[in-house]
Length: 256
Image (cartoon, rainbow, N blue to C red; front, side, top):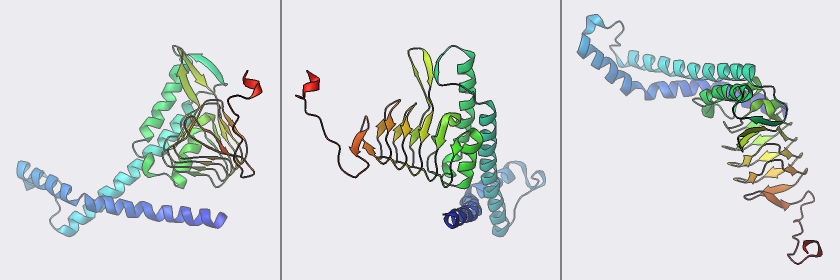
């Protein structure tokens, strides 16, 4: 596991400058058009820097690509730092929407929305995990977060080797009946949250449990260890021993 994490982080460190170069090179036509337009409007003597050769244009483009990548990473890290600093330390419960608590919560969520300008390009990676850690997520070892939509970071706990699928949404809040409802989400070791699934407030996902792709787990649901849940709303389709759960008939005695 440690060797895999090292290789993954090393490859991430390599892919960032590669993407910078790729973005920079793809910007060459735009840079060329922009600088030539400036030259036409103001003249050479009024332009501080005007590349004259394609080599100079290429270096300019790569520099701009690296600058853009550095801007994005810095934006995400600062957003995580400020989001974690200003996040509300709330006990589970209900709070009036028209209250200082709600304003504080909304303020912390603003930083997460700002991070979304660039965060989707950084997950999964150690930078994405670092952002979530700064924001307040309690991270176990070997966590793989493939989503930019782990919300309410300070109220989310991810155990060791948890995998969050692409575009999965984890919310530790909801609004109903004029109130902000806060309830932590806890996901146990080795659990898998499928692509595009939704985990609502107060859910507890047991060790080794699986939430299937696009499933919606209702608020305050507890999924026992090892079970597989799917559907909208999510229901158990396979219990820990690998068998399917029994389905009660509609004419059972307890339904009278």
